[in-house]
Length: 233
Length: 288
Ligand SMILES: Nc1ncnc2c1ncn2[C@@H]1O[C@H](COP(=O)(O)OP(=O)(O)OP(=O)(O)O)[C@@H](O)[C@H]1O
Ligand SMILES: [Mg+2]
Image (tube, rainbow over all chains, first blue to last red; front, side, top):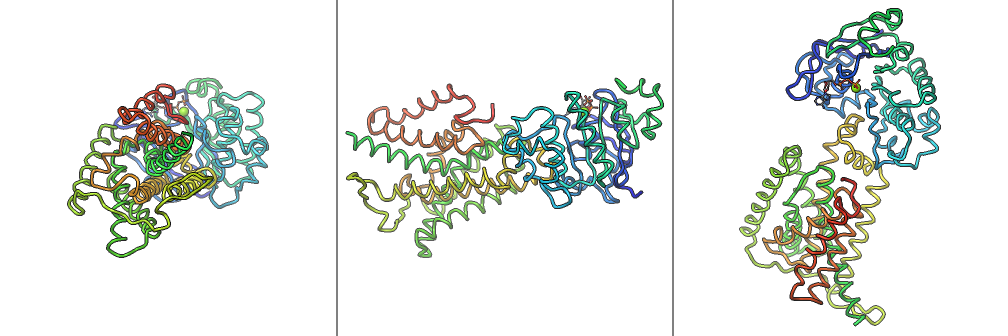
């Protein structure tokens, strides 16, 4: 499998403060990684470091062999990173359809395909972002990121605050994405078991450092480690 | 009596249309970049002088001089945005105010140096001079023309912002810059283009407005309060808010000066204070 993303000895944070300390990881084309850890350990910071929204104090970010850190935020998205932010951050002044068209880039993902994947978005295409339910906002945030036609999808706690039924639906969709599409995925989740069931590889962060790295199956079979570093399993 | 009232309304609306045309760019920079650009009036003045210059020096007809005013102000706006303004997007509002006031004074000195302190004349085409009779009432032809131009531009602007992909990207950037950039929208480019558009419209308004507002080097200071009111009371980052505010401002300013000349100049300030108390985030404000 060829390497898509490599993070090597990355130290980053906000302004002078350092959150991530010497973090390294690797994602292959089409691969999937569960990024786990308790609240405030730096999971979101790791994702937005990839987007160029933190201060990179040291280390390298490699994307298909090239230096990712050279690119500005919008260039990274265009290079093929689809970001689904933790707070979803749908745009209140854009309709559902405008969310999809405003960021669309050429590739296999089209509006029709996104609507086929999320039928409830299709029926609300004229509604504004702020008028959607939590579950619909999450679907819109994922659909919007897919319209960028990414090679890597960053999902930051996609199940957070959603009803069990909606979680079931999203779970199927994410599984589908990982299984069928060529898109690689990094998924941050509080529901560790759920994320591990979806992914090949797993990584645990604790206070900005990598404390565990294995396949997801191995971590699932290691309740002691899960218990030690991850809130609820 | 009724004829007077209609006349005052008409003058007020045409005056307000002009204020909107010039001020809408300021509302956009305030809403999109969160930048307090007190030099906005200088772009209008630049458009005014461009109009006078190409007409008197090169014999360009008035209708061609107006697009030139738009292009010159837009180009200078884009240039200054790239080189100066963008450095101050994250600065405090005090820094922005000091910078843009400094720029205003430089523009005033430069205009005085090049064109002198006197009012510049503009010769509008003969069919725009005089009056037009509609239903037995006399309307200034130039003011009708002014309203027509602003109606067309407002519709085009509304279409651009509400119906096009570029407009959706502008709104996305106003809502959330980081997420917009994180989804591949080139926010820097959008800032530059909208700044240029706002400056260009101010320049067009400056050229169109010579006949109504006059043109001399103090222009950017004399009218900045009006433009700021249009942006602040209207609600930064919208189009309908500044439009409504500019029209109210125009009508009440004209009416105040006509009906109560002793205190006429103060009427709009009282009105704007009341409006701001009633609608602290602007008439159609999105930002709290
Ligand atoms: N914009 C910011 N400026 C300064 N510090 C921040 C900022 N965002 C996060 N932090 C700090 O960085 C640390 C890591 O935060 P981060 O959001 O990456 O954690 P997380 O693992 O995603 O947590 P959660 O599970 O709650 O989402 C925390 O101590 C947090 O206070
Ligand atoms: Mg987080």
